[in-house]
Image 1 (spheres, one colour):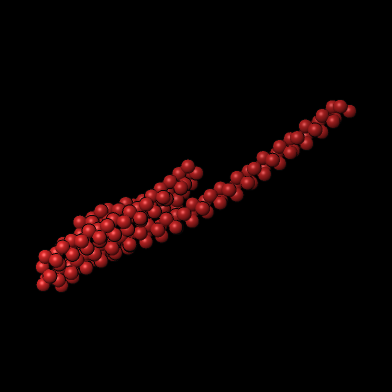
Image 2 (cartoon, rainbow, N blue to C red):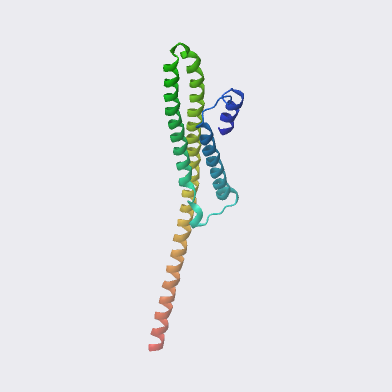
Length: 168
């Protein structure tokens, strides 16, 4: 999705006069993709399932998604105010001012929403993987606990029998 936005920016002519808010949104999008990729690498390829590192970084995906939408919405509001000022200064040039603004606003909002969609989807998939790993660890812990209880029961039984034999 990030590559689609970047190719639309490059070949669609939107980078000739982009919104100043587009670059922070693209920076946040890059950070979200890098964070999701590193977490996926940790969970699937490296199989690093240490409990203290299992959920680390998942919340940052959501924060990045919300930040991208907030930046694009803020940028859209500022650009809209600038558009209103330009249209008020020269009302006869309305179409010449509005169409480029509309293109820039669409690219800005599209980049923010695409980042939020990708970040949210990655968060959901990684969250499901983490929940599966935690459930697997939970089953293993229950098995180990049952084994420990069984061993303790056998030890208590053998101690009790030994004591009875000694008393007889």
